[in-house]
Length: 396
Ligand code: FAS
Ligand code: PHB
Image 1 (spheres, rainbow, N blue to C red):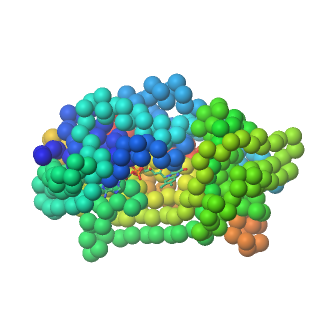
Image 2 (image 1 turned 90 degrees about the vertical axis):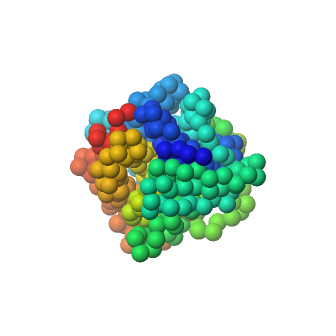
Image 3 (image 1 turned 90 degrees about the horizontal axis):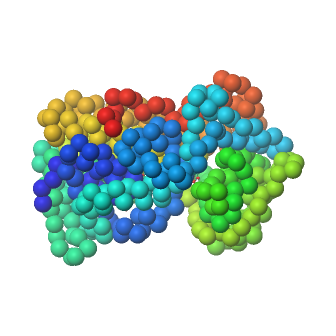
């Protein structure tokens, strides 16, 4: 097969990249290891930054988002006996949207199938070749058992945190940073109306808790747990009791309404960055190049921002034979990657207990400052609602 851009991974990064390139007449092929159903079934991010929403709308992907997404002015930050609302719109003029990654994925799948996009699901034995030439290629065994080769002008690794593309860049040409946090998140999806209007991030001596949501009738909640926690050790009653204790401590007049838990899983927390995000005709976008702990709600938004930058760079490279923005893609993307990596680390370090009483006092002091200082709250708001996606990064 021959295409202009071969994409590894049909998650949000790969599917959005294909969509944005198609809008500029660039042909793509997507190769995905899992089935369409599996990719759609993953429960992941829940928050879209203002810039992500604007980009999805401009790309013709905003109608269901505007109909079903929940616009939020800000978040609640809390610690025992205090809950403070940070109103991002008052502070910086933009808020965020609650619209699950699953929904974004559904919209992308609908758009790409309507466009007749070639997506090879359940592909295995993927090989990435000749990335240092101007004819890189992918070879894989399709779900029909046939071995296929796609020759392209560029290959993009949108293959997430466990994909093969990042390893194609030789050790001599790359640098990696990695941090594993000493705790994990136990996350649940529950068929119950949220007990809050906007997200609650709660510091508590027992550990962090968060109340998020997916819709007016579906709640998404998280608990800080130890690494290696076995989800089977947590009965639904134990989960609700811990959530009520941590979210409700000293919050007079507020109660958490439990309901049927439909999904529960344990998510490890880590930071990872690999540079550069380009080697020859191989480009990386999304989790293939960077992982953030979910406390800052950055993972999905950073993948979208990478793609918003990469799409026009690839259009210039493969259509206009102009490599200038492809040459600066990695440095341009990494500025936002490090900003989001720092913010996600900061939110994680501020809200998760370590068992060290000195850390407790530092965290509480930081929370009191952020909740009482306009400067502190504005700093959080700017990062959480997302810095504008650079105007030059996308024509869409
Ligand atoms: P993805 O991982 O979504 O997609 C990569 C795709 O590549 C996958 O479909 C995979 O099957 C495919 N692939 C891998 N290897 C391949 C191969 N060899 N051949 C072909 N295809 C291959 N972010 C938040 O902001 N909030 C959250 O609460 C949150 N929760 C998360 C929970 C979990 C369990 C995980 C893993 C991530 C979570 N994230 C969260 C981050 C998540 O939303 C990512 O940032 C987002 O999925 C990034 O999108 P992609 O870069 O497209 O990677
Ligand atoms: C979610 O709703 O899944 C969610 C929201 C905010 C976060 C992380 C996850 O910081």
